Length: 325
Image (cartoon, rainbow, N blue to C red; front, side, top):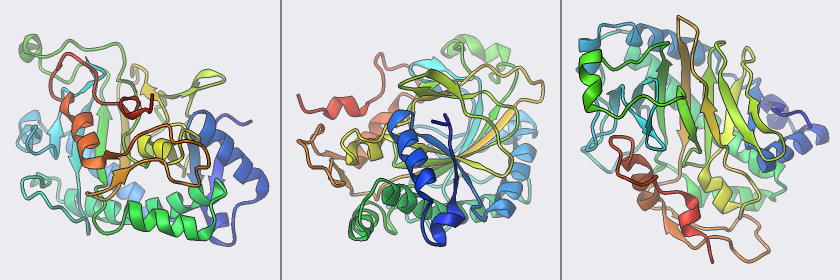
């Protein structure tokens, strides 16, 4: 198989994927959980969000830390995130926007005053990628062979207006983003720009620039590159879709190798996540005994976020915690 297949969303919208593309999509979802999406119709929003990201991360540090995030409100700027108890070499800005419904008034995006294009660009991106994620999710479910009724049930029961999707801007500089005088008080920098992990939601839509460095873990081939392809969006399967499909789909384990480009690397993930009160368990056309017991999405995502801020002495919650013995 082609390691990272290229899938044409417009072909799906116009009548369904060709058999060869559907086969490649299923193989990718089962092996490493990654594919590239083309003809998605979001080129304008992509261009604008990359421009906004470049302007934001180029601002003086004091302007970025004015919208610093914390454990109570994990939306805003951060420069010392941990993955698998190791500090990543990156800066981030986490946000929610558009028509997203939040039931927690303490969690709101800390918008900076500058750049002027920042909030409009990120809001347009969030709105467009919410719709795009829904289309992509439908394509994946149809590709897995689910009938239309099951696809509709999944979308209704799993998402809807109260979905908890989130997005972020990533900047991977070629050096440690934490000032020298502050490094003694934080976890030492790890050996990756972003350490290996899976995403907690259903699917992630990721924009990446041409710097390269993203890798996925294939069951058959080990670590493989996820190449930058102009005009494409990287899609990866998350933990929740692995549970829903009872391990048929593989949550994509991925990492970013150290960045050597002096200009750094930019990426923008959109995390398509279940509705706030979702109960997660295998149910997508599953004929065999469930591999997981039911669990709360809220409980799971809280556990996944906890160790972003400090080393709590154990790895964050993984879906293996809910495996049926």
